[in-house]
Image (tube, rainbow, N blue to C red; front, side, top):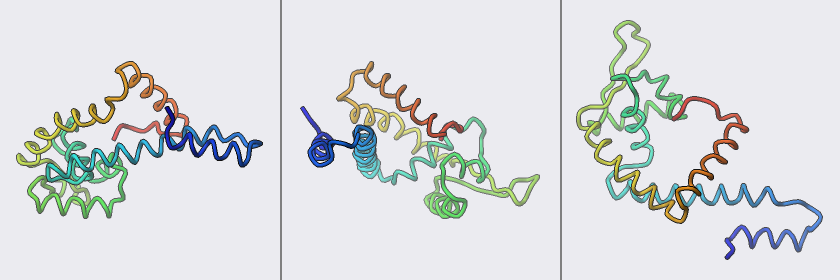
Amino acid sequence: MGDAVDAILGQWARTRPDVDVSPMGVIGRVSRASRLLERGVKEFLAEHGLEAWEFDMLATLLRNEADSMCMKDLSAAAMVSPGALTNRMDHLVERGLVDRWPAPDNRRMTLVALTDEGRRVANDILERHAANEARLLSGLTPADRDTLAGLLRKLLVSLGDTGRPE
């Protein structure tokens, strides 16, 4: 049983048998899997009235051990620019899902926290989101998932992704 990447690799083997295109097999599959998984997550969240970035912001705040986060730390954790984060927070404040305020000891710093409604929404969707992701990975056994996770971790570390979790 082959996939779309096998067809591409076969074309390269016929057209340029002198070039080792095997890395394309890995990168092509990671890229295609990423797009398909992202689509599955986005569709699921849309069914529950959330954009993927909204859930990402809510989840980041929910798993934070403190009651609030400064915008700078939230920007780093979410890997978005401060300007984009400000727009996202404006939207979430309007929806009543987060509050933000100046830090009492440093008025140049802005703190953000989930509202009660934001915490309810994040907690409500979390278990169903995890179940959806399990569904998306149902073609793999638990051992396959562990192996794949380990290999992807090794790849990410080799690419310099050693920062704190998002």
